[in-house]
Length: 273
Length: 322
Image (spheres, each protein chain N blue to C red):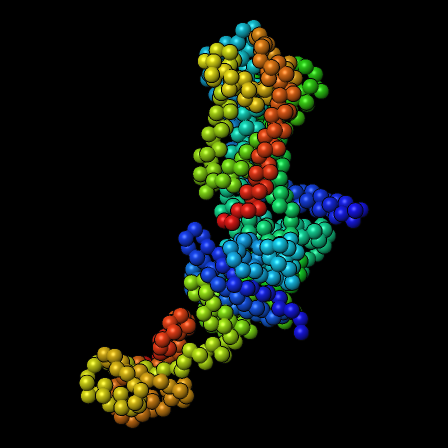
């Protein structure tokens, strides 16, 4: 009995170690792609200009500044878009011999995919920092205390981890990096735009509004607005998911991880490409 | 005597309606080199992928280093090294980072991984390039790094899928030397190749596979002896019937004429060649080309896949202008 426990412990420890090694590899890789880094860091700036000024100039929110309303949405968009990088990277890995190398090593089956989504989280931190800087530059403020602001950022990161698994899934299913790029953009755009990221869903047609209200992105952004103290306009009412945005975000995020991660591990260890 | 390092029994594997492996059985004694010889698409890579736990077999069983490749895959993985046809090193990592990562995945620990990486980089003459990104490596360097990566955990059994395909002659000779020194150290090697000479130089046993079936098996000597004798071929400047007839008579009863070239068995190889050249000179016959021909890999395949008539000589090894 104790022997079984010891073996399980050793396996778990080995798995954690493998995931760490994999994450380390992906982070080193990520740091060596200056073109990707440049693109990722410039994206937040473009977002702020595009949505804050190009569209934002024609959008008014009652009793406040659209750009303050928008910033939590752009944080969410940044972590959402990181899934595309993950999908492309996983599909590229799968089309190269490196996967065969990993699969003939005595490593935990889940380590590579866990490493992939964890590294995307770590590599996303500088991007989020740039986004914060951009927000501060255009007048956005976190008015609800540092503690709540940190909590909000952690929530965005947690969601980024979950959405990273969606990227892994698409990367594993797609036949090529190009296909992965095209396919991942479908959920990204649907989740990003049928939500309260840019506009108030209450003006959408009823069927779209239901989707928007239960979109994890809406919960995440609403939670972010609450924690940052950017609640402008009437608070969402009558919709449970948006009245309890933090609980909804955490629940939906965990649900995504619990559903998608095991599928990814299975797909990865049974892939024969 | 120890148990064979690799035992495969009636392995079968299909991809849709394509039967990549139909029935492959083989045994490789510990500490020896076995070459899987076959054309592109013969099933070599599929066989390696099944034996290295990358691909489940649809039929048959295999044991590698004493463990079943399906039931005990983790134990097999801990004891094998694999170098595939495609490069498996990360282009954005340096040579040393690649090896250290593999070492960590093998749970050697950080310090031991570093030490082992240095040893292998030294052994494979990559120490000067160890801090360069792999994307700057030449084809030969990549293969050596790949091989080094397969050796991090001192595997008992090493699988090399076409280790020299696409390499220049110097890199190929280097690779052969590396493989030989590994075998001298006691490693069992199974390699695949399309080249008869490679199998000849490296292997203790050769298994010829074609369309997913083992069609011949034996030592290089046995295999060559089964293929047939060398041939001599004389090519004349023009197909003058009188001259052709004189040369045909010179070459003996088994000589065959095809246009302006005449060929016949040369049981004594170079000795026969020398004699024939001397006689031709004495006869004053102008000659375009005289050469000794050996059975080629094509002949091996034709011989072992076609069970009717053993065919005869083809590729020219030497040519003497006249």
